[in-house]
Amino acid sequence: MSHAPILTHDEIQHTIRRIAYQIYETFPDETSIVIAGIAPNGYVFAEKIAEVLEQISPLVVTRCKVEMDKKNPLAPIHTSLAPDAYAGKGLVLADDVLNSGATLIYGVRHFLEVPLKKFKTAVLVDRNHKQYPVKVDFKGISLSTSLQEHVEVVFDETASTVVLS
View (cartoon, rainbow, N blue to C red):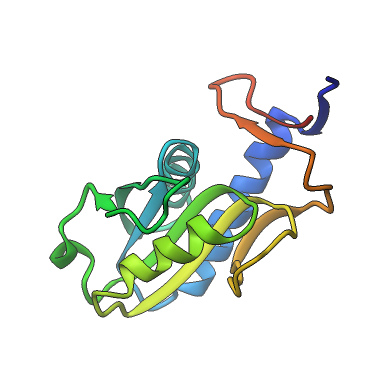
């Protein structure tokens, strides 16, 4: 099986920086926001966005790890923050790849149980195979792929990549 590179390490870094600027521009009146990432890779993506946000803005960024069973998104979702820690705040929910939209929409549903000031979503790769009516506010790239193809995101300090296999 061949692995076609989609994004190089430098392209991923540039994309994360662009998304961080877009997030900063979307929350102009906030002093702090929460970046929640769906583990494992969505949380790594969220951490990278948070690092850039802290460099480019005065925002206080709180990270939140979202643990969920992607094969059974109706199972209970666990977060590293208690609901009162993000209630009334601006929140961005991040994941690495948007396939059917199930993971993201059930993640969104979880956070809607608490009143938020503003809620946005971010993904590195949108595969355009949505089965759910989920819209991504910040995305790295959109890919038209077949259902048989697999998009893999590998985060590494010096050699992050996105490949299609």
